[in-house]
Amino acid sequence: MTPEEFRAAGHELIDWIADYRASIETRPVLAQVAPGEVRSMLPDVPPTEPEPFASVLADLDRVVVPGVTTVQHPMHFGWFPSNAALASVLGDLASSGIGSLGISWESSPALTEVEEVVCDWMRQLVGLSRAWVGTIQDTASTAAIVALLVARERASEFSEAAGGLQSVEQPLVVYATDQAHSSVVKAASVAGFGLDNVRTVAHDPWTRAMDPASLDESIAADLAAGRRPAAVIASIGTTGTTAVDPLPAIVDVLDRLGPDGSADRPWLHVDAAMAGSAMILPERRSMWEGVEAADSITFNPHKWLGTILDTSLFYVRDPQHLVRVLSTNPSYLQSSADGQVTQYRDWGLPLGRRFRALKLWFHLRLDGPEALRGRLRRDLDSAAWLAEQIDAEPGWTLVAPVSLQTVCVRHLPSTADGSPMVGEALEAHTQQWVANINRSGQAYLTASKLDGSWMVRVSIGVEGTERHHVAAVWDLMRSTVASLT
Ligand SMILES: *Cc1c(COP(=O)(O)O)cnc(C)c1O
Image (cartoon, rainbow, N blue to C red):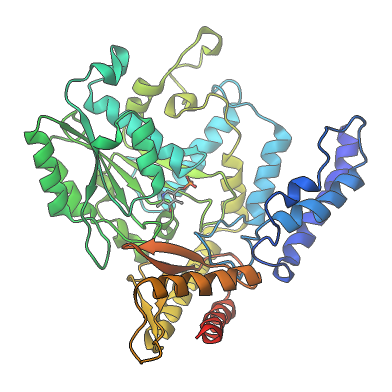
């Protein structure tokens, strides 16, 4: 494709994207396709001749769009929001168009330095001190792996340079509650800690916040048994109920184990994947009070804030520790700029990086932080409003505090004899009403287990979701259960 052909096709594609977004509300939220249906619409063999752009574009409508669950739909209340603000889409397009290769500073100085600047802009927007420097990872899952790899090396005094974990006599232990994201356990297992060395710290039964006394006891028991506490993962906004672990009390526990940065002090990784976006609101920053004492922090502008995937920020106070653990310096990547510049390949796992910073750069400049703050405040107000409605409605109950924009509910119908439904019948009822809503395509909610029982999360935060959409999903919830009971 020549640049002139690209220009013509590109204009058409931009029009197509604008039309798609403008008409998103007319589409079902959940993709109404059966397993294998999308595949069956595609040829089994690759094309032999180049095809016209028009037929590819037509297949976006025919094949792709029906097979996409429209998480940009204002009636999408599932999982967590995965906004893809159009301003950031333009940045993504610019990144692709420039086609930079980020393997060293020299391979694209702008890629490195724009990333340094936007990470610092975001640092300021979320109110972190100048002690923090950041980089963009693909996802919070990767950030958790990086955090646990560097935690492992701090606690094992750089075992990687010799016999590795296999030569370490004291088992290294990781601590989190069972409310932590699944990526945390995955990171601990792939970083070599072993699931036997992942401790489930107790949490408060209502707020689901980590119980610092339980952390303290667990650590003491491991020390007494000759094991070495290596990392604590604190969640600010868990995925289930947006629970907030108490950082100041956790830091107190760690302070007793060793000075900042020492091998005896477990690495504190703060997973604020979802809630981090809310830290652009000064009035919400008390949520992560104590965060300055952490060793690493991750949050995802690609969730609520709306910078299109994959944009996960990872901040540390000691980037030299990342470099010591993750640096590779093959001869073909050495240059005269070494020592004066940041080599992001030494701050994470991949060598080749995309110019992801352009997504944030465009997003922050074109939409502006004040509009982002306004949208987040709108969503927090909507969540508080919905929680009030649920609280006031007989037969409905909130199953967790609403600390952010996610409302966790159960509907508790009464049985024929007037007693409340419990046990298996209630489990089936919950799964039934949420499945009915989701299958209808009118809205999408997530059923999720909490304390072993099904509940439903209404996660507000799609860019287009206004209060009337939240009111509409609440109506739909009530009419759906009414049709079942
Ligand atoms: C979404 C989420 C993650 C995982 O984020 P990815 O960027 O998809 O890997 C991790 N932790 C929490 C608390 C989350 O909500």
